[in-house]
Length: 328
Image 1 (cartoon, rainbow, N blue to C red):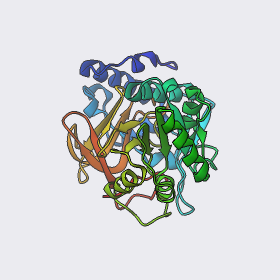
Image 2: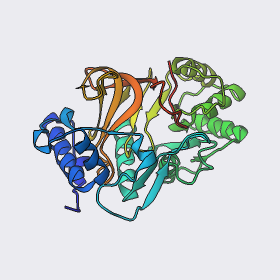
Image 3: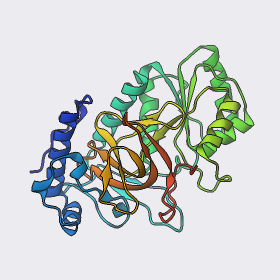
């Protein structure tokens, strides 16, 4: 079994039975074609025949992406995503069979949450990330910039003066604008060029990397709302090891596209999985069909009854990652 029909994934529309069926199909595909995942299931004593719901499906620890080639089927990767990490930590490597899958995933999700990208001007403020050749975030923002087609769309790196002038012109034109940036870059910009934005959404992607004193998400959002004159700060939850993102339109509550879901596992009993409550976040990302769609992260948070979730930080014992979200 070497092929997989991804159209079934992206046609999901929130029906619980269809989601469960697709999870089970994906599980059996990865169990049969992913050596690392298969060995992990054997170590856990998993009998594939006993897997009946998505909560039964074992998740691969995210740390395996640092030490193993996590691939479903054998292939020459189209691209490789790497986490930024630090000089003291080993980076994660995600071997991507088909980068079109990633583009399809983030474009369909963007359209779901924000509408047609052609209606937007996309401004990227991603210092340090642009210097990396294998950043999934840079690839995503670059593609959104190109597809927007707006002449002012682009990366602005450290040129805060030009970015401010561009924003003022876009505001004057009443142009729908998305300013998406790494947290420390947005904080620096808001401090240097405070302004009142009315037609711009500000979206932070996490990432402090020791650039500033650690701040809670609430403190970051307060500084950004005050500095940039917006009511809410939007956020993106994604990572090197995934091919999908969740989005928050304010207050740190994230929503997933229909092919993605967050579960909760108990810190003391990692095999105890719940659909709601607080604990360690476990991600189902069905778009990640040629890698691992079931990943146990080191993020701590809470999942609510409506499926939305919060991210509170990382488990104390886990490695510090370059894209880490802020601890409350």
